[in-house]
Amino acid sequence: MAIYLGNLSVKQIEQRLGIELTEDERKELNETHQDVASNVQKGKWHCFDAPFIVECGDMDTAIKIRDILTPYGSKMKRPIDIGIAEEETNE
Image (tube, rainbow, N blue to C red; front, side, top):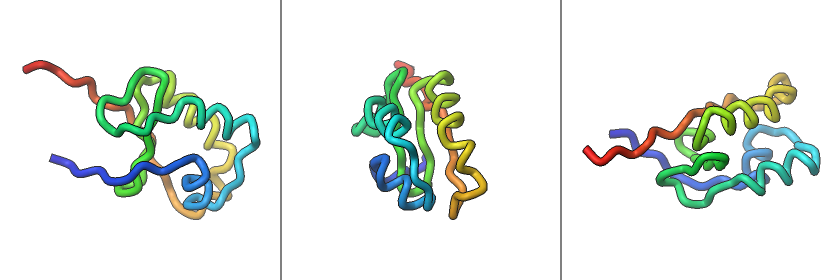
């Protein structure tokens, strides 16, 4: 069982990466941020502090996050992972 900790805001992500997003990018990310870590919904994301990962509710959201962050790749102070939340099952 993996343990994930934290709920980073867009501003905190920028600080950790050492980048500055545009206002439009910040707005887009703030509008789709989900505070609750469990069961990340489609169209939403949640960023953990440890490990440093953006957990997305679906592939389209993961692609959107990737597309926003990719142009800043060479300026980032550290790597960040992007993942897709596993769907909860009733087994």
